[in-house]
Image 1: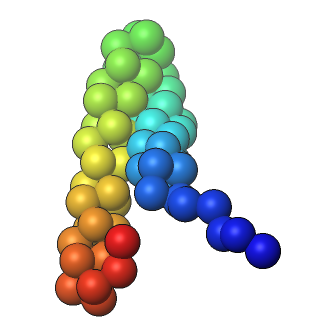
Image 2 (image 1 turned 135 degrees about the vertical axis):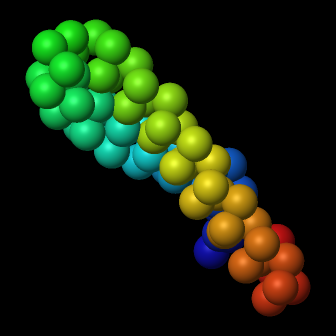
Amino acid sequence: MEQKSTKYSRKDSNSSLGIAIGVTFGAAIGVALGNIAIGVALGMSVGAAIGAGLDSQHRKGKEKSGGE
């Protein structure tokens, strides 16, 4: 059976996870600040950065192990 490539789905998964985490914490920050929209926007920005960082770590690990 042929195995599907997960090259792009891993990146999307990490970005989605980061954004979901960011929205959750952003909503909490927004409640604390009194403006949920600003909190969620800040949280999504931080979450996207977290997702990009996770993707970068995954790629670096693949390069060290010699995998694709």
